[in-house]
Image (tube, rainbow, N blue to C red; front, side):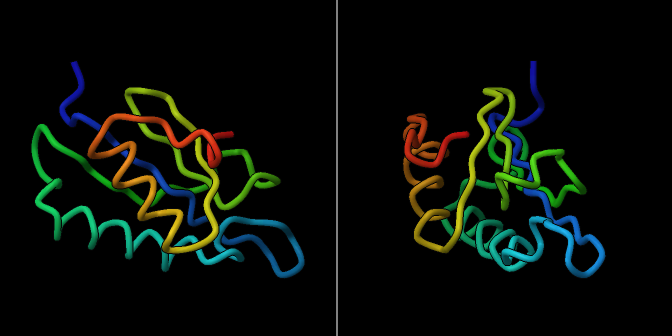
Length: 102
């Protein structure tokens, strides 16, 4: 059994200039945004949701990317609105956001 209900890993890998990577698409800023949003809604903590920074998740061409465990759901996202939708739909209501799923 998982320690967290949902454990989110957001790739914030930074590659050399000119190489594709999630951090070139603002993933670090969106990681902070998602962490703050989850905490503000009282969703963070033991047995709840944990949002973590990750190194390369191996899907640079789909970036930026996150993976949600234990559901093993992969998402791409581009802005705060996408993060809002992932939090409200997947984190709160347990529904996969099909339009962002990879």
